[in-house]
Length: 130
Image (tube, rainbow, N blue to C red; front, side, top):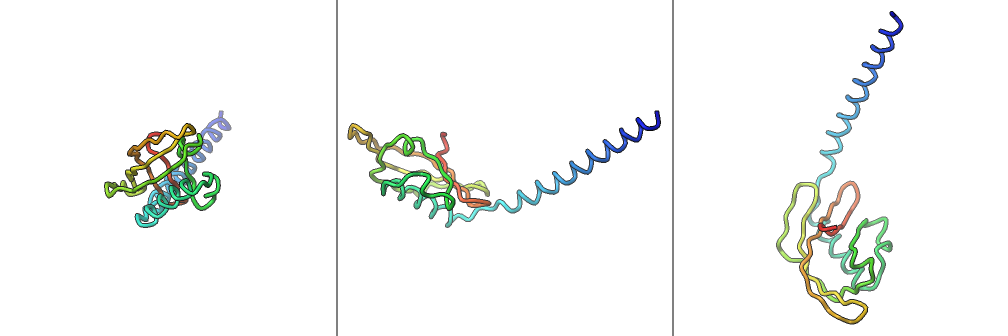
């Protein structure tokens, strides 16, 4: 019986120790994930310019990690404008982009799309609806 109590007590200590390390790590991580807004705008511009210039999404790695399904499916970006409508949530910058796409048949489509851009710990650019 005594050995069983020791095992349970040591298990409890292990769980408490693990939780304290995890919680300490979480608070430190949250503080380090601050947004650099100018860097975020610049990253979004670089992301879209690379697409417009015919590059692939993977060409931006490791500097920028991003995704846009229209780019990945082969649509061409003819033009884009990052609108002044932006919002920060402290970790990400939410930008609205007016863009003109051209599909394989040559049909042009203009649309406004929202992107979410992060700058820490790595630079990321993703469409908000994907």
